[in-house]
Image 1 (tube, rainbow, N blue to C red):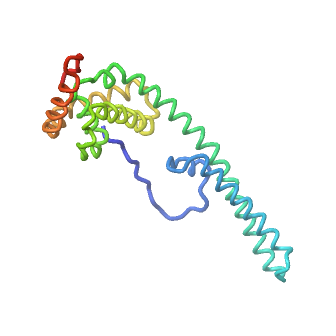
Image 2 (image 1 turned 45 degrees about the vertical axis):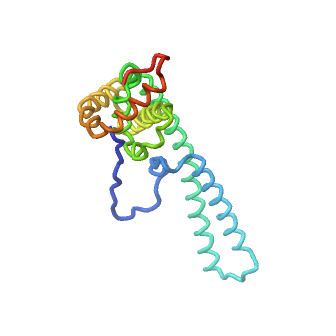
Length: 210
């Protein structure tokens, strides 16, 4: 249930990264790649300008500077390509996450009991439960639950983007069911406190069952 963090395989340097390799890093978005490409283009232009400037460079020095400008140009092209690929990948993942969110409605989306929602939050983003005071307002539990479902859909879209959506959701649901009892036992005190709080706040207005 917890988001999977892919581990990069580190080896010996193999030269400049390709646009495809650069776009794989989801922490760097399309806009950042664009900004880098623009900066590098300007830098290449500045280096070329110095080859005919007033620095008094000899032929060997001008050649080195021109080669540096060429390298920076290639870096700029790679960053520009990565910007395009990064946007395409991000758009694809967002569409897939939306499909996963829709497919989760009959299972995860149907959970209304406090104990079930706490278990989902614990499975996806347990750090949220380290600050129980944030749930003094009963509405905060639903907000945290919705955020957990969003995080789950996002992580599943990134780690299982070659399988059918229904398969991805079914696997996540089964893993949750297998872990739910233990998670609820782990957060028993919090669940009881939130259930009492929810019942009190909804008294006379048809509150949800705990």
